[in-house]
Image 1 (cartoon, rainbow, N blue to C red):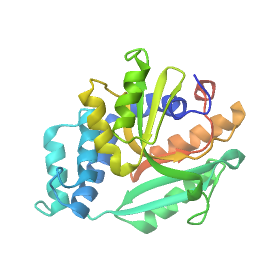
Image 2 (cartoon, one colour):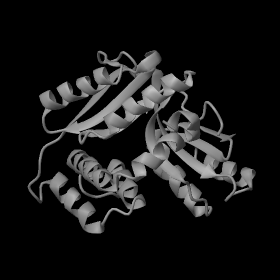
Image 3 (cartoon, helix red, strand yellow):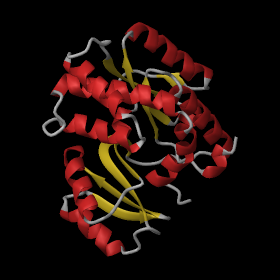
Length: 247
């Protein structure tokens, strides 16, 4: 497991997230609703909706669930109105934590997220306190064992105007501007390259080293935040390792 890499941090947390499939469907439905509400129900013209649908299909979310969420977003079906709120704070060791939520009750979510931070040994900060430590990027993680021709993968990515390409351990990491995400994804697919992970994320600009015990505390806090129904994504700049996940 390579340190200071996006692939390492994601792999440490992915197993637990995969075990929560039903809750994941609910969260993705909200994401689709918001995307359709803000940009319309046509994924060909609404890139955010296309990305949301692709993300749902990647975890085998049923087609009916996807279509129902789109219709709720466009108003064809009655649905709950959600607001997008990002919370910022600190975990053990002072590491930065960013929490993206979709909620139908701001006051409830605010109090509950604050409580999770405090119980996990952290604290919720003010808007902007850690956001500057992250940047919004499209990220593709590609298994180098499945695609050993590094030059071919790099060429496909960079010709589609990806920002960066590098190898970290067993993965190639490709990053791009969010508006280029669909173009880079299409270019990779056209070249027969399938990414293990393809998502627009808030990536830390730099990683912070933490000891194993601190890392375990940070992971527990992140897990508890992830388990909240209103939380869509949690990001940290802590450099997480497999050893920290063996809590």
